[in-house]
Amino acid sequence: MSDLFWLTDEQMAKLSPFFPRSHGKPRVDDKRVLSGIIFINRNGLRWRDAPKEYGPHKTLYSRWKRWSEKGIFARMMVGLAAEHGEEKTVMIDATYLKAHRTATSMAAKKGGVAA
Image (tube, rainbow, N blue to C red; front, side):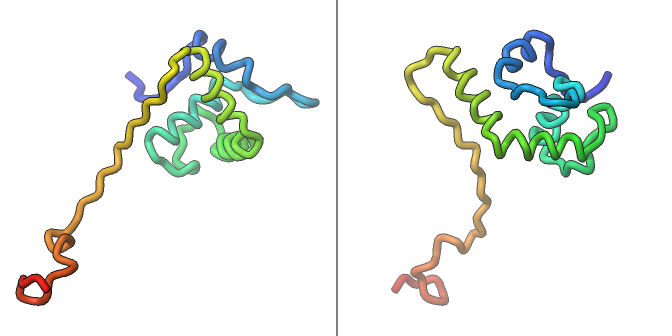
């Protein structure tokens, strides 16, 4: 069983209205490239470490870079959120920072006595 991520045809149908029009030479398979971009971002990998099934890593990076600069991904997120119809904004912060045990004693003098 493969651990690779692949967008479904239904998901691609929802995303396709947000794709820019192709001018001149047709783009390579959008499903393969977007699945690769999501896989890289989800797993925190370098572009160079992309599995071969997603195509050349330079293609993944150049599509991500070009579409990010044009705001394509931002429009996708806004469009998908608008379809949901939720009036409230819900945010999740998964920040986790490990502090050293002495990190809370900034105001204390040496020896553990507070100033």
